[in-house]
Each structure stands twice: as C-alpha cells, then as structure tokens.
Image (tube, rainbow, N blue to C red; front, side):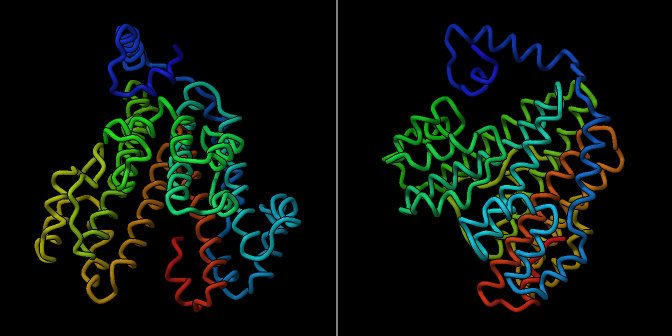
Length: 376
C-alpha cells in the first residue's frame, strides 16, 4: 500500500498493515532526508514575490470602479486569466474567478518546480485548499446551492484536481460525495462522529474535526529530523497559535458557548484546554492571561480598544501579525522552505484583498470601510 494511503487511514485499526505502517513512521521520523532544490525554488519565489501588488496599489484600486479594476488586473500578473475568462464572466465575477485561478496556477507552479522533500512539504501545506474546497462543497449540498455558484468559490490549488472537484460538485448527494472521499480525513471525521453523511445535523462539528485532522496530519508529516523540517514545523505551529487566537477573540466577543472542542491542538504556545478557560473570563482577567503570550505586545493596543472598536479591528491586527511573523522568519532563513511559505501566505492575502475590494464596491461600501477591512 502506498504511503499516502497508509496516512489516510489515520488512527484506524490497520490490522495486518499495522507493522508496515509503524515501520514507515519509524523511518520517516529518524532518517534525516534533507532533499530539495532550495536555491532554485527560493530564487523563483523571490521573483514571484516581486510581482505581488505593493501596499500603495490598494489605495489606487479603492479609487477605481469595477470596470477599471478589471482593466488594471488585465494589464498585469492576472492578464492571462482575465483574457481566458472574459468571454464567460464579467464584472466582480470575472475578477474573483481570475484571481482565484491565478492563485491556483501559481501554487501549482511552486509544486511543479520543487523537488524531493521540499516538494512533499509544499504539497502537504497546500492541501489546505482541498480542505477549504471540500468544506465549501459539503456546505453547498446542505444549503442547495447550484453547481455554478459552488465552482466560483473553488480554488484547485491542493492535491485535488479541478476535474475531481467538479465531480464532487456534480454528485447528487452527500453520500456520493463521501464515497469519493473514502479513506481521507473527511471520511475519517465522519467516523469520529459515528454518523453517515445523511445523518449529520451539525456540519460545523464535522468541519472542526476535519481542520484538526488536517493539522494533525500536516505536523505528523514533518518530523523534526532535519533543519528544514524543524523550520516548517515551527511555522505551522505558529499558524495554529494565530488561528486559535482568532477563534478565542471571536467567541469571547460574541459571548458564545460551545459543547465541543473548537481550538486546535499542536500550537507552539496555545493549548486548547487553556483557551477554553479564557473564553469565559471577563476582560481584565482575559487581558492579564494574554500578557503571558509572545504576541501580546503586537495586539495590546487594539485589545485595550476592543470594546469601543469591536473585535474586527483586532482580528485584522492578528492576521497582520501572521504576515509579519512569516516575513521575519523567511528573512532569517532565506534558503529554506520559509520564503516559500511566506510567499504562499502573501499571495493568498493579495487575492483575498482584491476580492474584498471588488465585492465591497459592488455592495456600495465606502472606501474607508473597505480600507479598514484590508490586511496588508
């Protein structure tokens, strides 16, 4: 059985395959395989990063109408996608589809010109787009969205091809969707719930489980046996900390309560059990507890104003913190996977910002409101 298939079985009883699976894990964790064309890939990434929109460009986009934004994008990095999709889409839909297609193309290029263990690590990280796409498809089945509406929101930048995602979209039922996803984390999450697709009533719980399994498998695939692995592992753990902090702030601000685990394990600093306690604290006690975390100074000023400004401003500060940390560690380790991951994060944020500007314009939001929503 292939290694990926063994991994996909997760914590299930492998029966006679268990000795082989243990051997695979033992080898993976102990033999330092430092392989990958790091100088070439980091040079390519540096060139691609130079194509990202400068911060000042967002100010220019805010002064444009939707046709002008589309024309601007069609003259730069997104030109090929704008031309290819121009006959089928227009306006905001064209902008959103073009930037998403360009994102997928860019990430697929990263994967294609990488080699060895570097390529494997990039692939594992980019599987988050599979996670995003499958969640979108499952939601669409529960809410009765049309295939056309769903496909506009898909970004085939992970392991699943556009053709496979279309097959899931065209499936007649959730049972058919999960038949295609057998032996994956999506199927495994259902097993944890002990339910079949047609019996699930709380898909939010399934989504939380899938996210946990994704990060669990991602961390398991990068044991700290080499310097490259240790750098990537720390990067992912910092990302988990950021996600947990965002969840904490949203839930605390809303005064919500959950009867399930909503925080991710595996972070560098955050522990799910501790954050579950923080959700229930009054503001002075919450602030005091957060002072113990390394990121506190970065968010302290906005945390103090959260009651007046709302949690949205603070959440954007946390997202900016993620960009800042990614850049810092990429700079410190220029010939590692970190510049690649830094670029992945920044490219994703650029696409989100462009889509936000376009949708904001369409919805009639003021430039000031849209500007406050951007993360740059």
